[in-house]
Length: 70
Image (cartoon, rainbow, N blue to C red; front, side, top):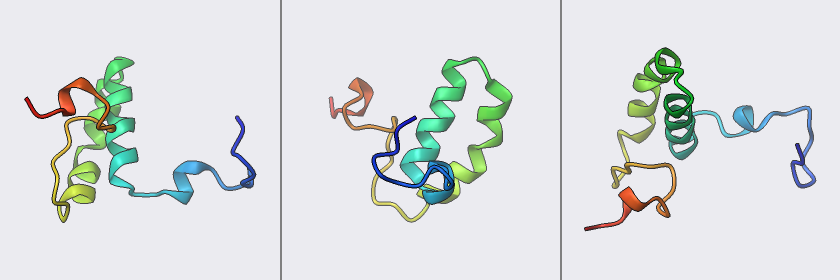
């Protein structure tokens, strides 16, 4: 995996630990892969990461169709 000039010794997950967008994306990815228990294990961490946010995203990217206001 190319890290665009960043050290491969420091994985992306460590560099962006507890990033709300990343955690939400990881949780949704695990759900789609059928790794339901792993996704559930992230629930509290995701909730904590978002608790001071001014948005409540439904997806890890606002480009997701469900993220658009209807």
